[in-house]
Image 1: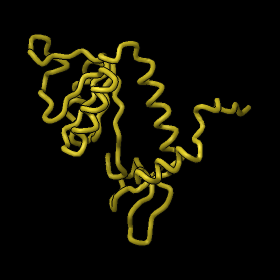
Image 2: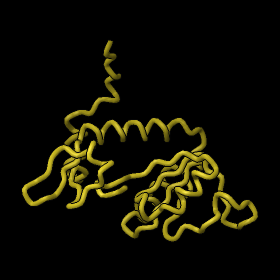
Image 3: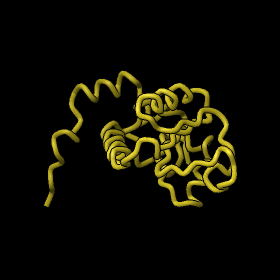
Image 4: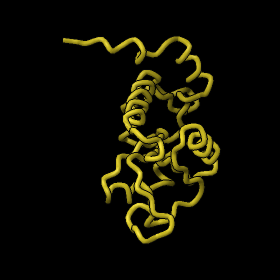
Length: 154
């Protein structure tokens, strides 16, 4: 039996327009084998196009996970890439979350005697490839991770 999701979880036409205007659907020329399930098609010039419906489903899932964290200070947004610094800092400023813009200090989640030690309940990364150290440490201490991936991310 198929249960219809609540109306506030379904994408409206305006939501789809915003996603298309932000060019969320444009991938890259390379595609990882594990990300093929999120590809809608390939353009003539070779660029992969991401499926907007699946993107919306994953965004709603991520939003529900973030909303489940009671204290906003228990969320840590991380970006080692320069294009994600502003987004991470703005997210932290508006929600009260912790931000790591720039180089992630190894041991920040595992070594309690370090001055940069943190104990977040959720980690958000802008690029799992460049934020691999934070993801690896989060796996050591069982912290869930939300990673914004591109088509070529393994």
